[in-house]
Image (tube, rainbow over all chains, first blue to last red; front, top):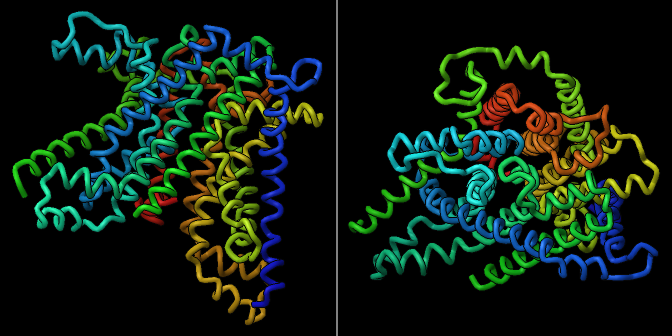
Length: 278
Length: 266
């Protein structure tokens, strides 16, 4: 095939590229631009100064980051043993794990958030179970708490943590831990010196994905935690849909966008470094 | 295998099985609640009944919302498959610089906060004078579906032997015909996986759609959240059960044709 022909084939990217450029990249760029301008159109960071100077907004940003961090941590802690087990599971067991991951993943977040809002009710399934097991005497308040939000969100995002870790574990030579054992490495040493370092790219990818989704989630907090404890995403929706304060909404969107972009860039930098070291 | 090894293995299995329960719990609860006669989500249900399914017929606007969501999901997935096929061939076969960056760009909407995208599109469409809610939604849903299609097609075409297409061309097929008759049938699993997840992502999208709807164009997730705020009775669980059934059937078909393991590689 001649080079000229290959160049012309390269032109096939143009329709898709133009589409994403126009309907996706340009609107985001204009949003960024708008958030750095004041009402008269002059360049200004006044809106950001005001947001970071406001204790309420600061606490909302802090809550959003804290919840996203806890969701990522919880998802990582329970995804790790699951991925380990999935690596050695075969046949029906493996299918069971795959179905348990793929089926919830292909369902809408509205469905799952609704289910959790039922589960967390004071007369709901979780309280009833805890009382049957005599762990608590009276129903405890779960709905509208940050704990409930973290558990519900970790449930929704868990598949996106398990899958990348499972993918890297699968590529590892299953005999590596045994080889390390032959060389005299104990279980802890094998785990921390062999299995974990090799799985790091998957862990980084999973954490980045879960964190960036958790930091910008909207449906889950609005159903589980309600209006009283706002997150940045809920503030954005409110400022556009109810308050009609588009300047505030644009600036908060920019903050959320910058967080998401820095997580993506940071994680790909980290993944590249980890890849280079191996 | 030492005792410590065995202990950790057992511990991992217990946790992994706990995770299976944890992941499926919301789905099981939803289905159970939808068949309950009770108004207040008591479990186990005092009596089984279909009353919440009957109540669905009295839900205003439910059918319209379902039709709109199906319409958007089908059209946007189709548009993404066309745009995505062309772009993925261009990335796989073209010889220009920055192909890796382009691939990253095409998949990047997946990592962006949906709400921020919705806000950005709302302002942009207003700026250019596009006031029609249906067209705004359709344009936006192509941005939602395209990354899913691109992700699987880029991976599949990376390992596809394009000599097959060239051979078909030597035998007299035009390039578009060779793509249609040789490339796409060979990559059918990728098309099925990418298309399925794109379709589901469009059906489920809330954070982008909410900024672009009007009173006449409400998608299913938007309607459902509205019902939850106005009158949160188990008829919402009945809608959810319908969606769970839909996802189960779609996955069963996909698992039969391409296998569960392939589904997660997309």
